[in-house]
Length: 199
Length: 143
Image (cartoon, each protein chain N blue to C red):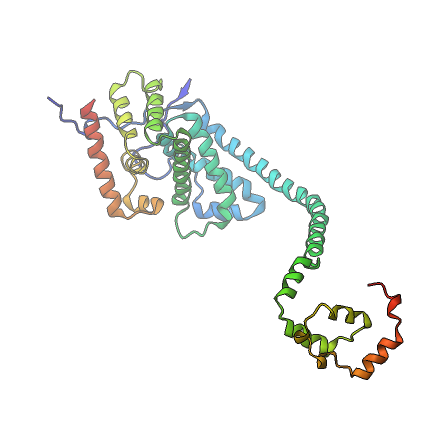
């Protein structure tokens, strides 16, 4: 039995969880040895769904997404003491997740020797064989069209289209100008519509 | 004819799912990994101490071997080459200044041409040379 993604809210960019601790409070508690574990547990609960879905849409496979999500939080645990707070905690965690995704996909491409096409083909096979998409031809086509985008453009598309993130937040996470992100998203949408017409 | 397709025509939804209770278990799994990571980090310094004790004598030995080979005298071939490069005049000047000639040294004089070794080089008077010759019994010396 699979769990529906009901907790995942597309319509808001803030984490949709029932946890109440603010980031500042979390960081203060994390800095104290006696409340460190409790604070980190709260942090994971607060951001786990957003981070997991961000990764899952990039790597498609649940097991890969699960491994990467855990790796992301381990990195957060290791580096949270050094977090300078010149950006939001949420943005910082998202950036770690984005880097993990891109590194994972790059390493996959290196293994195949023939970059891009074989990895894309592998991801497309996963989409085709996904039981969640069985019977939903339109969604399957859309997912396959998204997979044909270059990795970074796919990231931009996912963050804007699915997560409805503000360009300013995306700019903080990806280290790219707002203008470039707007252009990238616009091009991605055009490409996807072209891909959908081809099929 | 191709169909005009707009992204906005497709209902926006997340098509993927996760196993039951996945997000309830994930924090616990992450916390377990942070705990094991902490143990790993504590284990490494413990390993480092005996490793350091084992490596220190090895480094000392390598240092000793290095110093030994560095302080070895240079090859004799190089000396020969260097002497060959010195001119005869320089050798004669050196010997006339610093060397005390022994009787045996005279034996070698026979092999030298007269013009190469002027009399004043020997730095002895004819009388002194004769006295020296008289003092030693040349027949007892095996050349």
